[in-house]
Image 1 (cartoon, helix red, strand yellow):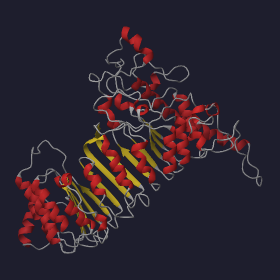
Image 2: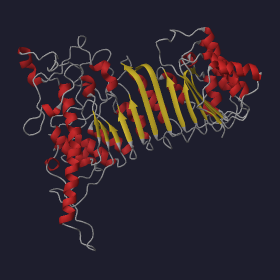
Image 3: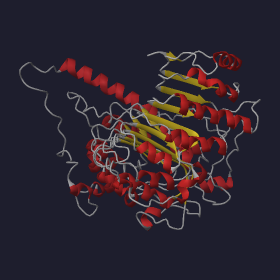
Amino acid sequence: MPKFSGHYAAPSVYEVLAALLRGRPLCPNIKALRYGRDETTPLSIFRSFHILMGPQLQEVHIYSHTAPLPNRPPERDVADDEHTASLLATLKERAPGLRKVHITLAPSRDLVRAAVGPFVCALTNENLVSVQMVRELPLDPEAFCHLGKLPRLRTLNVDVNHPAWTTYTTTSDPHNDARPLFPSLRRLQINGVTLIAPTKLLSFIGSPVLRELTINASSDVPRHELYPLFAAIAALPAGRASLTTLCVQVGSVTRGDQDVADAGPAARAGWAYADNIPDPVGEKTLEPLLAMPRLEDIMLHIPCPFDFTDGLLHKLAAAWPDINRLILGSACLMLEFLKHKESDGVDTTNSKSSAKDAENPAPTGGEGQRAAPKPCRWRKPRASLLALHAFAELCPKLSVLGLEVDADLTPLPRRLREPRPNPRVPPRGHPLDSLHVGLSPIDNPLAVAALLSDWFPWLQEITSGWDAIDEGPGADWDEEEDEDEEGGILELEGWSDARAHRIRWDRVRNLIPKFAAVRRQERRWRAKEVPVAAGLGPAPAPTLDEEPMDLHDDHLWDLDSDDSIMAF
C-alpha cells in the first residue's frame, strides 16, 4: 500500500507546492497518510495539506503534539483555529473513501469544535472501520448517532466533552431503530469530564460483539455515579455475551449527598471520614459487573476506598473464572486523601513508639538522619491473605492482581505456616507473576514471602502504595545497612506505619526470588537422589496432616461455620 509517512518537509514547502499544483494532489495514489506535528511547526501547515489527499486516500493518522515548550505562546489565536478547522473541511471534501480516521489535535476553541460535527457526519463510507477523534474534538449526539449507523465500524475512540450531552435526553429508545446502532463495534473508548455523558452514551451501543470497553473521566466524579455506570455496562447487549476487557479510569472521586455505603457501618469502620472522602466501593456497587462472566481483563483505576471481605472475593472468583488481570482501586491516585495533616489530624504513626517519640522526637530528615513520622488516613483491609490465595486458585489464568489485603498471618491454619512442599513434586505453577498490594498492612515479611513464593512460584513483581505516602527525607532506606543478625528488618524508633509497611513489602519483593531459587535447587537435588523408576507411574502426591481444602466448598466462606477460613 503506498504510504506518505516518515518524511517531513518545511511548512513553506507545502505552501509552495500547493501554489504550483493549483488544487491537484501531489501523489494521487496515496492510500495512507501519517503525520505528527510538534510545537515548532506552525498550524498554518494544515492550510496546504490538501496536496497530500488524493481520491484513493483510505487512512489518515494525524497527531498534533501539545507538550509545552518555553517558546510556546500562552494561547492560540483565531488564525490557528481557522487552520485546524480547514484540515477537517479538506478531509471531508477530498477523501470520501476513508476507512480509518485517527486525529488528535491540540486544544482549541469553538471554531474547531463546530467543525467536528459536520466532518463526522460526512463520513458516509460503509467500509469505515475505525474512528479515533480525541483531544478537544468532542462529538455531539447527532454525530455519534451517525457513526452508529455505519455497518462495519469496529473501533471507536471519542471525546464526549460536548455541552449537548449535559442536557441531552433521548426522546425514543435508540435500539428501536430499524437497524441497531454500532452493530459491528468491537472496541470502544469514551473520554469525558465526568461519568454522566459516558453513561448516557452507552445506551446507544447495540453491538452484540463488543469485546473491549474503556471509560475515562478527567474531572471530579461524585461517588454515586459509579453504580449507574456499572449498571449501564452490564446492560449492554455484549455485557454477558462477549465483553472481555473493561477499563474505568477516573481522575478523582468526591463524596456526594446521594452516596450510600456498600456494607454499612462495617465498611466505614476505621476511617476518619471528612466531607471529601467518598464511601468505599463494595459488593453493592460492583454487583452489576458480577453478571458478566466473560470478563478477562478488569482495571478499575478509581481513587476511592475499596472494601472487600473474604466472602466477596469468593463471589468475584465465581463470577469471573477466566480473569487474567484484575486491578481494583489505585492507591497512588488516593494521595490527595491520604496526605491531609492539618485538616484531619489523623496520625497513623507506629503506636509502639508514639509515647517515646513524644519525649524524644525523631530527627527531621537531615543528612544521615531519619525523617519524622508522617500522618495519613488509612483503613485496614478486611480481606485476608488466605482469601487472596483462594481467589487465585479459583482463577487459574490470573497473572496480574491488584488488591489490598490484610497480610497478618495469625488467622492462617498451622498447616499453612509450616514447611509445605514435597521436593519430589514440582509446584503447581500458578501463572500469577505481578501483585500490586496497594496499602496492605504487613507484620512478618519473612513469613509472607515464604507463603507467596510457595503459592505463586512465578511471582516476579510486587508493588505497594506505601512508597507514594512515605516520601521526603529518609525515604531512600537501604535494607543492607539495617538488617539484624537474622537477616530481618531492623526497624527504627519514630518510623510511621507507612514507612514500616513500605519497607516490609520491599523486603518481601527481595526475598521471593531467593526462596524460589532455593526451591528450584531442592527439586534438582531430589530429582538426582530419588529418580522415578520407569513404568511405576508418576511420583507420589505430597502428604499433609489434613486433606487439602476444597476451595469450592461454600462452608469455607461461611463465617459462622466451624470449617470457615476465619475459624482457624
